[in-house]
Length: 505
Ligand code: HEM
Image 1 (cartoon, rainbow, N blue to C red):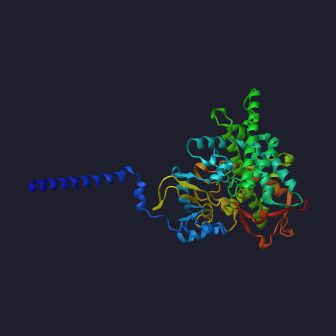
Image 2 (image 1 turned 180 degrees about the horizontal axis):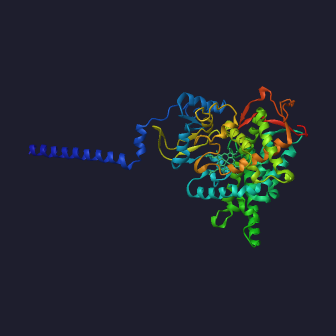
């Protein structure tokens, strides 16, 4: 009997053992095929090198207590082109090679989504293009691109020119903050491309609200009466109200007009209001505000840097002035005629100055993405949920991509840069749809600035120093600084004074 029992228990034991082996096999299968492979990957792949700093605070303080570009450059020097850090409460992987930027922004862009703090989404509007991926993003992007292709903007040159002349005229003879004036210019150009010629009707109302909204953009997101954020959110609501009226007015006008192809249909509002697209008023308003946001400070910063570099490199200034004067001469008797698209295509040297300014200043030093799943890159793990920052500035300042990177040398663009090394307008599905408009507005302003004005850069005590036949400015070394907020800018927004050139200058 006892023998029987022991035989039974041995049989039980062996079947338990078999069951255990089977279970282990099953678990293995589940780990391998059913659970996301990333769990296994997580065990095998190391995180990129670098430091995560203090708990929660991470390295935020190190980043913001100095020039952020020094932070990025020193990290790159220490750890190489991919490294980890922890800023603003988020673990991040920073990448500074053109290959990695292509990986994140283009070839594997489906593994990375755009990411912004929730407060920024509330201010600009949740439905704005920047925050989306997939079908909705694709639809919006098509509509935005349609309004900013060369075909859509070629006939806007003389309107942009009027805005440039107004802007320069208002700057004449007084000490101005270049950046602030350029912001007015780029704001007005943005409104022109959004609302067409109607923009003058809405300019003042939109300006009043948008300027308040913008003040709160970098404020603490505390929505209590009295805070900047609260005022901004109030202005945001008012702005949406104004936009809703503009949309209704446009709709009425369309209904009343026999043809829907009025001249204004080529503007961005017309594109968004395309009936086949079926965008709601809220979606249109969020995206109009988003485009103003994307268009304004960026173009204004680049223009401010252009003026600074031209002041520091008199031979480039002279070459640009001569190129622009040649355009006036070529028009001959038509000199009084407005600039047109063809003229703006004949400014290669000025265009190279703009390209070099975009490279050296790299006003958007980086962008943000977030890994939507565990991603393997260059033998490292980028864990799901981590932020990924392609560092445009490091790519633009790499001696391998641009020899003597700190030298301002527009002639380097006589030869096209290596692929994926020049990314002032980003790359891939979220790259800048407004790049053609941005370049156009800069060319038009530089045309009039160099051919009509002399400039002097002001020191803090507003003494002016001028040199060279054409101008220009020289600056006290102590003022030759850069401020960050959030774009890199010449210190104090580059104070200058403009005066009309005399015949002999
Ligand atoms: C020199 C001026 C400008 C620079 C340097 C610039 C740069 C950029 C960059 C780097 C991006 C991509 C950001 C990313 O990948 O996360 C971007 C996106 C964008 N830009 Fe620009 N931009 C400029 C002017 C403009 C203008 C004038 C407009 C509109 C008229 C505009 C509209 C946009 C929009 C709507 C996006 C988002 C695109 C998307 O998410 O699909 N930008 N810009």
